[in-house]
Length: 84
Image (cartoon, rainbow, N blue to C red; front, side):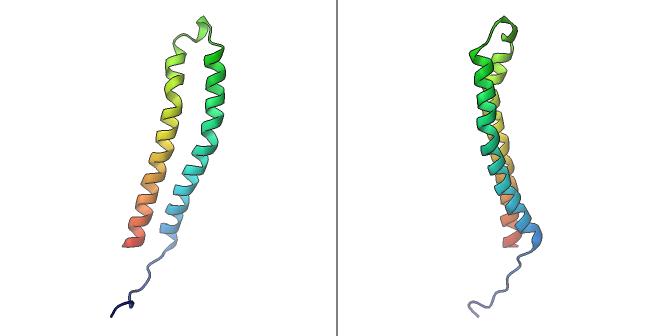
């Protein structure tokens, strides 16, 4: 019968979806702070920071990828758990 399905919404799936949103929020908060610090170090780079600059220039991308990957993975498992 159409529309006679039951809902299987449990706390675990809601928590996974919530954690997914928290990953995105924390990433959006941390990224500008890290960019400001990196720009300060790169802008005032002297001979002491010669080897550090290439690592610092890649750091924002690593931060962004890690938080987006965390959000996608937890969101995927949350949706998979809801779908059954």
